[in-house]
Length: 297
Ligand SMILES: N[C@H](CCC[C@H](N)C(=O)O)C(=O)O
Image 1 (cartoon, protein in one colour):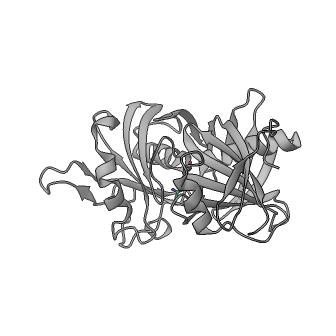
Image 2 (spheres, helix red, strand yellow):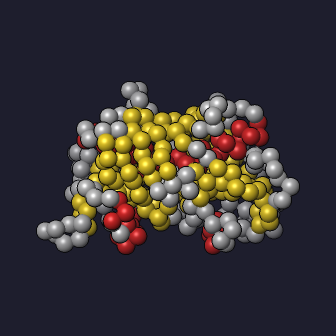
């Protein structure tokens, strides 16, 4: 049994997040531990955000992101907001610089409690997403679901926010499409050599869209922050919205701004649920009834 580590169960608009304190320790959370925590109804999560000591000078922490199937993700917008809220409660600071597999990100907690994360620049070339085939225009690629002459979904936009996304544009309410039926098929489609997060999106105004996401390595979730960013960027590239968009996901609204310096900034809430400690090797855990301070450590 390895040393018990503190965690906070949180959520970002219903995206179920575990923020785990791995500081001061070289170990990583074992995929089997992640899978065990995901199976327990009390700790069921979409992503674990593991806070590690910094690797690069000028950054505060290294964040490892683990999906509920035990695989790693490069980016997780909702999870980053949870990390910021937990660290702000612990340290009293409101600005942080993180390193993730997607690069270096900055984030800020505002006076009212909302949190903005600078998700960096989108990557829009087919090799960067990555796709298995050359597409010079990633605003719409050839891919469809359903009968060849009457596809249910077709011609998605693709973008990378450090992690791969495909967004299928639809005319009707996003809830009328059975994303649970074709999500996994599209996630694992050979056009996506690293698999992909799959979203359906409806433009509702020149500054608003609604979005549902089937996440790579996690399935249907109530919110996906990086998908909200990828959808907002793709809508602006297609000219269907401007560069400031309210993205309404099943868990609620996120504000996304694709700034003129090419950075995508996402703003939304985070919510603390309970604290505990867990074994990073096995996932065995206990609830910490005394932890009322809403941090992780
Ligand atoms: N929930 C996350 C995305 C997790 C990404 C993950 N499913 C992957 O790319 O493998 C978000 O808020 O951005």
